[in-house]
Amino acid sequence: MNTFSPTLFATKRYAVVGLGNNGLPAARGLRAMGAQVVAWDDNPAAREAANGLELADPTQAPFDYDALILSPGIPHCLPKPHPAAARAIAAGVPILCDVELLFQAVRASGSRARFVGITGTNGKSTTTALLHHILDRAGIPAEAGANLGPAALSLPLLPHHGVYVLEMSSYMLERLADMRFDAAVMLNLSADHIDRHGDMAGYAMAKRAIFDRQRPQHLAVIGVDGPDCRDIAAWLDTRPARVIRISGATPSLPRGPALPGEHNAQNAAAATAVARHFGVSDDTIASALQTYPGLPHRQQLVATVDGVNFINDSKATNADAAERALVCYDRLIWIAGGMAKQGGIDPLAPLFPRIAHAFLIGRDAADLAATLARHGVPSDTVGTLEAAVPAAFAAATRHNAPIVLLSPACASWDQFTGYDQRGDSFAELARALSATPSPSTTPSLAATPSPSTTPSLSATPSLSATPRRTGAT
Image (cartoon, rainbow, N blue to C red; front, top):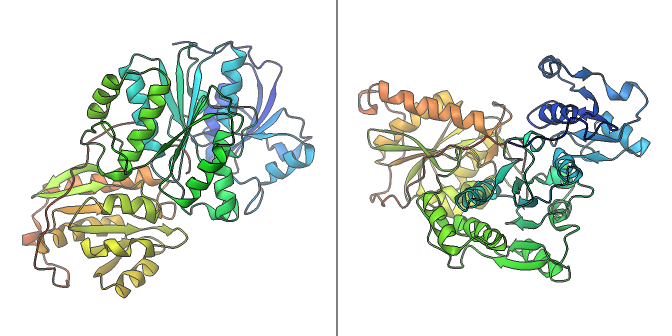
């Protein structure tokens, strides 16, 4: 594995604020390249974990840095700038993300390795992992990371023919300076992170930055299943890069069991377009689509107990993402809740007839319960996953529903460190049920009678393993 020179950034001085999944690897990576790094986190526990780094609050001294590396989850503008960001703006110091520094390091090392950026409100993690899988099957040196772990500055130096496949959140895209993507992908847009971007137009502009600075030899891939992306596609036609439009409704190469549904057809079309751009044959792409193992926390089958499949779709942190799971099953028990996004779960109403019973957790469970009640969906507000999983198992047997689906349609931060911890907890609780008596021997919760027919299971989720996600959407 190639590494970066220990003197590559010897003349640089950086402040790194936020020592989580992105910031800590960034601080360590920059220091390994010879930079002088001052690191800080407002959380004392995070500072204690930063062994060997120079720790100092950069707002308490002259702000004489080449750049501020601000972790993606920390705002530099809306809803309120972090004090370090305010100091950087006042001092004219650029605020960057770790992906920008990776690009600078690769080019400063003399490598012409290609960069792929993949964004969208939903599907970008699957598309990132899928493209990496295709390139690996094609024998092309490739590394995947950024918003889907590992962090950008923990990736190795790739040779000229190598490819970095980077999942890019809106938070990261608004902190790029010189970076340009050899291939840039925007899958879709739906309302998300409005508190950070002000409104939908601001969110769209942040996402659109993935196409900035592209040249005629580069590729721009755009999903056109929604009006916001169709507007961006029209804008791309005025830009220099070659444009490919994709849609979940467009026939594609055959996909394997880890890529069910129309949304995954779009993900596969995006990965296929980029792979072809890098010279991968259709035969290799087709084989990779069949063997792709899937991602954890995305319609992941984590347990089967007494004929009931427990599906971990914890990555569904908004209604649009949850829709992509709900549409795959004809009859299910639903576990949802957490910190609801703008619009709540109202957009899911057409799929509510599939839900035999819902169990609601987290901060905004009452709001979700009110929505379900308006549509006649029986639900119980149980508060925690520890209560929801056994209750859902009992309800699945009672209603003859073959699926217990965790697809929360909400963020997880009220009760968990992230969607991955939420999904891991669900999986552990589901597997533990196999060691307990079956629901038929335990008292049941009050229930509303189920429909008289039991539709068949319409999709089989995949088992999978892949790096954890490190940021936002």
